Image (cartoon, rainbow, N blue to C red; front, side):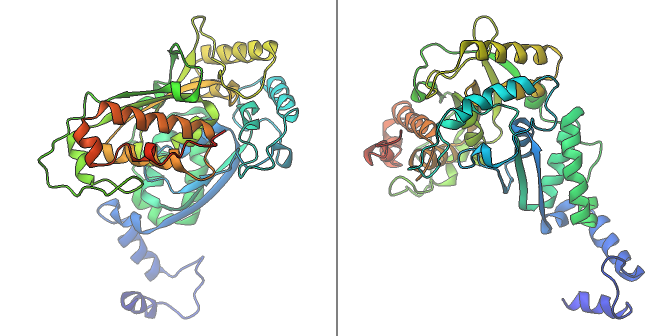
Length: 390
């Protein structure tokens, strides 16, 4: 404040913040936009919201570990209360499919006795439904760099990123200039390499779709670490030096979006699950029936768009009851935190609750017994939090 008062004293009284005097402009240009590196940009927080686009755009926008914000909840909001138009940036000729899925949605009832009333009904939501996503008090540097990477994808992805970048410049022009590194970023390889994966056999329940690989995790018992007293407590971050554990979730599109928001395990790699004919797979535990003709039409539209090369655009053809795979490699502390949070969250969705309880079971089996006992890896199993999940 002392420095600012000195600077303001050089400017005329009552100057307009939208048209600052030259002395103020020079100071900001030199100390924000002209700063030697972008750490100064961490001091500015952005508040940006937009909507009308579909879940693929929202997935890309919040796909960064430093994300702070919120996406409109499909678990709470009845689609009859919001716009039912096809989302922005959806490929052409999806309106008929969009309307057919909404007709199924309309024929289902929400659970009035639940905290999240649309948990079962949302499996029928079309991939072309509209959503919104906001960066709320999000660090300017993280957002700007992420949006620059996303804009390199071009097409509709670049257009969405460009809208948010333009809003960021309006919100904090000089700070955004300090953070921008145009032309130096490339988009994440997992974005470019979105691919199809064969559906694993034997998945009939949510808990069947969890796969854990501990081959790159090498726990050492001779380190100075603080042992946690029980579940739902943080593990010592020193475990991060002992390697990573890979987890793969095979689950519905709707719940994949919930899992994706767990930042400590980012980056998540998304894959579309298909059968032996190359068709998307219908989630076997979807809590209602879907006409075969509708699913055949869904598969046909997905294949049509995928063949054009617009792979992220093809995701708009997938309803929330389509199956995807998502995988991440995370440290022990991050993965256990994620699993316990999802398995025991009050009001959590039954699909990810069951999957994360299965994840805890597998960790308790695959990790050395001394580690399981020392860090209470199996503690959630003993709390019996699996009751009444559906």
